[in-house]
Image (cartoon, rainbow, N blue to C red; front, side, top):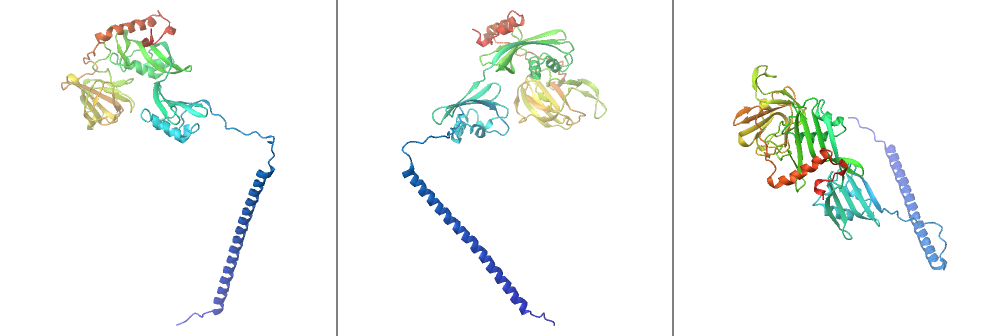
Length: 448
């Protein structure tokens, strides 16, 4: 067996090197420690000297008369006045209001408004105004929507009171006339008005006119509508007081009845209801792609079958409305029908809505629904070749053609309200017949 020879000389050298490095390290540490102690002593000495000099100056060297001050002392800039703006993305009540008030006041303001309108619900794009006096916020206003605003007013040293008020607008009356070329939407846009006005007009006559199949080129409409302005800028439409639609040479007229709660219902000139048991169609501004028939070539199976329904072609996601009041008896998957909803109405009627892409949030079997409620959305589920709504109607178990089925009117205006309604009609007609200028308009409820 071979052994490696032990080199004692090499081992001794290594020890010497280690000791040298250790001594060097101790020297470096001692140097930095010495520098640190000296600096602390100098700082203490300087501080004592400055303190002594300050003391001597205050006791001995201050002249009996005040010296002339050449520099001007800057005072905090006043924030008094009215500050208006728009809520930006990421803004919170705290980040917004701390510009003018301390956190404690922001918290007090939030607590005051918590039950009426939580300040955490501020939305991007909405207007606000802050009123500052003596560098203290006296009032904060926030526009909740087009109609209401939140007002927080200082009440005492730290507290605030909260209330919600209607936003004041300048209300002007305008007459709007148009002619149908291809669609109601285009006709309204062509005269410089918002599509929202087309939707509202269609809603008024939804029981009288099927805007999917009944419109013709040359049909006409006329409206008396309030326009709401703020600071000279148009903000929104108000009430439609009168509407007339001439469809295929047949005139339909609607007059607004405004009740004591300021809600609007539309009647004929004699007080008959424009509402009927069922809407003319479960969706607006689409086209009929397939009608009610006992014999149709099925687009999927390519055989001849009955089609006891009306198919409305529409883009996926188009809202679908229930045509009448009722109770949901089914909302789920129906194989060939895809996602579909069945609703039971009074007097033995039932309606079905097939091939939906989805249901309205929270909709389920047993829910009560009201005429015009959105219940689902157009899709192409089940046996379908493209997005559309398959709409069906039954009475006592027998399929009916929804377009030709009898559709009785709703209740006429009550005898108690009839006299007041006639006064409203007479007032509106003064503007319709040009007996009064539109500039003379005052909302009916404000008339003396």
